[in-house]
Amino acid sequence: MNLAFIGLGKMGMGMARNLLRAGHNLVVYNRSREKAAALAGDGARAADSPADASRDAEVVMTMVADDHAVEEVVFGNHGIASAMKNGCIHLSHSTISAALARRLTAEHARRGHGYLSVPVFGRPEAAENKKLLIVAAGPNELVERCRPLFDAVGRQTFVVGVEPWQANVAKVCGNFMIIGIIEALGEAYATLRKAGVAPEAFLEIMNALLGSPFIANYGRIIAREQFEPALFALRLGLKDVRLVLEAAEECAAPMPLASLVHNHLLSALAQGQGEMDWSSMTRVLARNAGL
Ligand code: NAP
Image (tube, rainbow, N blue to C red; front, top):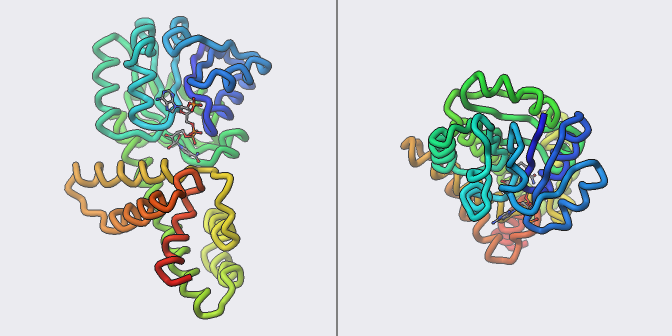
């Protein structure tokens, strides 16, 4: 397929490489040009703007940071919306608000384009190794047409609804689950440290009890305080908790734990931890315990 890929950050770079490995023709664009140039050796063409990248594409994929970045690359000067041809499909992989997903659905429909929200779970390493979990929502016919692309970047695809924004709600609820586990680990470790029990010893029990690679991984990172380099920046994690609170408010569904972790992430940001991994939020819990 002729594809355009916009946004070659920690996640986008690996995804774009896997699309090339699967044999697709890829035109790439990244705001900081050197990242796009790095993919040229793998067979991608680097474009001068999102519009330039999208002109001949059947599918345009975006993997930029947040709502603002998506608005910029879609609707900004030389954005993809101005260049996509009739019938072209936009796949938005970023973790963005349900409200923006609804706007993208409407604006693309008005222009004769397709739109799917396709956020992903998994760290940059999973993106590099084709191990992402793909969450898709939108019209079935478009989902089926794009399935080979999901298979090229991920290990499993979950379709959660026919309205694209439903995938964005599923994604932020998933990230809420993750940060909820980080909160629990941070609180438990603060108590354990004060009680003189090594977090690593406790983690061995939890691994035997819960058998979760996810808890084993984060439990180790937090016990060793290995928060840099960030695999998922705390500033982006804060954005995602803000998004889950917005989605909850829209549906009138209280999420008290999300409000709590929002405050903890904000405290961590105020302490200059925005570029550290989001699991560094546990430093706030340690400080609260006088550690
Ligand atoms: P990242 O490494 O910070 O990359 C962000 C990308 O967005 C870069 O390509 C950046 O361009 C671009 N960008 C930011 N603002 C822009 C703007 N105003 N205009 C144009 N481009 C802009 O972030 P990431 O970790 O890849 O995350 C990307 C998305 O995936 C986010 O929505 C994040 O929540 C989600 N996600 C991340 C993870 C993870 O573990 N990292 C996992 C799942 C989902 P420059 O290179 O020029 O800065």
